[in-house]
Structure formats: structure tokens, C-alpha cells
Image (cartoon, rainbow, N blue to C red; front, top):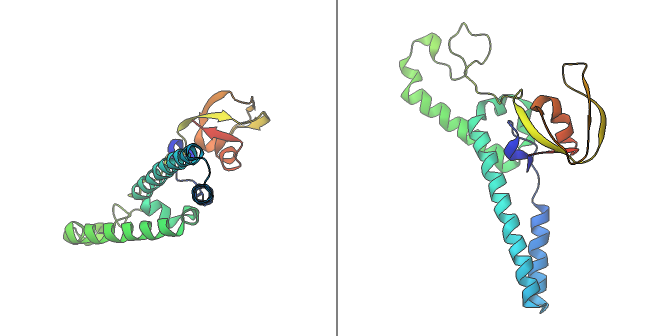
Length: 182
């Protein structure tokens, strides 16, 4: 589960596998398959649903933490339709709350949610994920001559070995599925 160890929100993964498992359990139950077999499939389905709930909870926490950053970047397209609705509702609620409780009482140059003052050129009040943080990962296969980000250093990754590098260096390998975060 890369989502838990990644500092940023990753591309949404669909629930198709769980729907297939639910259909299999229903078919086995209706066909009179051995109750032990049905029970084992049901336990596996329950375990998978637990992992899915954990995955979704982590994603919602990241959306709440980085909602303004997500809204202004291409990360928005990585969210599911329901997550986009949630993020939009969160930002609207936060803007309304801050406007009513704090911002309306501040001087004109300081009433922005995104900037500390009018003099700020960029959105300096928006929390962003720290992509330069170190992460542990495990290579799924051997990767030869992988060049690290912003350096001329080249490393060879051996299958099933654990490594620690900056997240932004290995992000392309995570997206391509060549490594898993630990």
C-alpha cells in the first residue's frame, strides 16, 4: 500500500477487484459450494474491505491536509469523483469558516486564505507535501542504471532489497509500479 508511506496523494485506484470478490462469494453461496470454502472467501473479502477502508481513510486525511494545494495543481485529476466533491466541500467550508471567524476582522491587505499579505507573490499559506522527504522502498525487480534526481549518481536496484532515498527521486518508479513503498 504505497499511499500510506507516500508524502503526497497518489493516483486513485479503483474498487473493481472487490466487486469481483463479492460476486464470487455470492455465487459460491447460491451454488451450494462447501460452507468452509465460502467462509474462507468471505474472510478474504472482509480483509480486503478493511484494507480498502484504511486506504480511503488515508486519502481523505491527505485531502483534508492539502486541500488548497490539491485544488490549484494537477493533483486534482488524481482524485476520484467522490474525492473531488469532498475536497471542494472541504475548501468551501474552510473558506466560509475562516471568513466568518477571522478574516473579516483583519485589515484589508491580510484577508486572504492563501497569502499572508497582499505583498506576498505566491500562496505562502498553503501547506504542500514535502516531496524531498526520505522514504523506504522495496524494488520488485532488478533495475539497472537508475539515475537519481538532480545528480549524476547512478544506482543499480536489486530485486527484493530495501532502500532509502528521497521520494521525489523514486516517484517515477512508484508510478510505473517498479517499486513499493514500505
